[in-house]
Amino acid sequence: MKKLILLLLICPFYSMAQRNETDSVFIKSIPADLGKPIHMPELDYNPDFNLDKIFGYRERIRIFLIREDSVYKKLFSRYIYTADSLKKYKEDGDYAAWFRWMKQYQVDSLPVIDFSKNELVLYSACEKCLEVCNHKNGSESCHRAGCDFKEAWFIRKRKG
Image 1 (cartoon, rainbow, N blue to C red):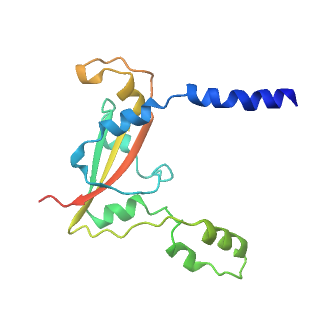
Image 2 (image 1 turned 90 degrees about the vertical axis):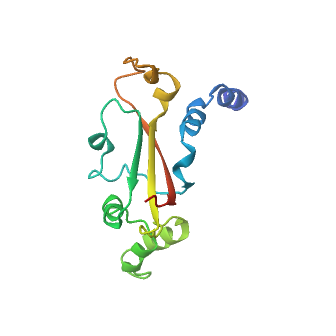
């Protein structure tokens, strides 16, 4: 019991010691002209879309424009956790428990975007490179062999 109380007393100190500077570095690195932030699902689930194949290995900041509905649908073709996806299941069938759970906790759906007026912008950057490395000055040395990219989505009026 004493160990548990001691652990509970020490935990707040561990959380204070864990600064999250990478988040603030990432947020500060986002250009102002990308548009309005929008929540989109993670792209990790889609093996058909890999930014590493589109951008060079040394690019630590990546901006990807989506200007067509077909590209948008391809990116999120595997995303099934939307309100529309629940229409194919019945509340009283084999998936009744799953359906009720999904309906109860569902808060996300893919937004409908008019690509004739808007474009979707994906901003991706390696937080550790932004915080630790000096790539802007031409340095090739890096924090480690592989980068871990964070993503942010924006929607803006279509340019040209």
